Image (cartoon, one colour):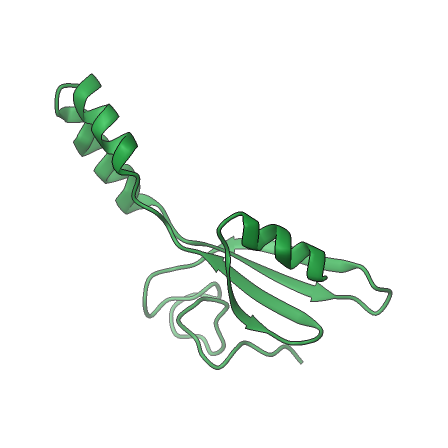
Length: 107
């Protein structure tokens, strides 16, 4: 499982929660000034608005990894949601987003 976590860390993910058997990681969205200025210049200012709309519509990415009894690693990626919402929907108990501390614990 350590190798999987390291791979995600190399791709910009951060550890949100971690135990011996599971880990929750998330990657925040990043504003690219290079793309903003390239689009701004190429599309005569209108490109900056397009990139701004694209950035505002982006969501942070997250991943949940679980170590199975046979030693394999099960994982799934999902999008995190704005404050007050979760992967399960608005205010439905334990969330799988960065907005919940302490960590989600499955039964």
